[in-house]
Length: 359
Image (cartoon, rainbow, N blue to C red):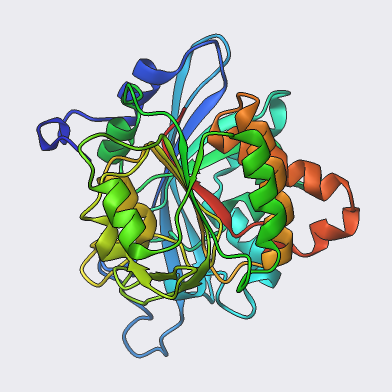
């Protein structure tokens, strides 16, 4: 996925210069926290009890509407919480959102987000903080969330982002879809929506069908959609999807196939995880490594009913021409606008995430 020859010369400034067009407000936020396996962590001082805290190093590059390139680098301390607490799987995570936002979103980014009338295109390189549902983070004092202020995508590194920003692969058109409407009873509405939006749909029900489709010399489609039961795995590569016929597809299986440019995993436990030693793993990463340019995944056991309703709106927006990150954002905003009480339960909508680049 990444060209190692570009490792030393791939920069946030270069990405912005190469891929930002039309005077869009765009920002790249790079985060690095101690204690995630890449930086040594020291807790407490000699003769004093250890106190849990996390130092987060923040680097922001952004371009204004008139084309000026700006940069800010700083650090912040998250007292009382370790890196392992920054996950929606933690039972108290949602009550900590304001505290977490103050550390993960630099003040200069907050000012940039709130001062723009247009949503900012924001690429986050979270480096070990991959379990954070960034769209749910509050922005400023006005009560808005990042979802309202930005079109957010997450990527594992700058070199990966540069690779994902490549031009679309020519030729392949069509949609391969796997929908289990028995185990996931709310997936039926989404299946109807994607069938309406994309008439050139190829259904699949088993591991063997997918293997045949995605090992063919020619790519069978430019979109792959899955709404099936998912099983998580602490080490990432063991993440498993249960097909309608009962067969299983793991993240390792994906590494053998050629993936369409857009993969949509509207099912539980479709996230990128950091393993011990810093290696990344998981279903979305496998798809990106095998040809996808954008993957919509999920960070935790997402709500089936809410997800099905959001994705119905997503497919209509995508078919109408919205890029995948924009379609996912607008689908959630439209769904939330129908009932303001839904804002109070971010676990129902913030678990969906786009792994991609700036486009």
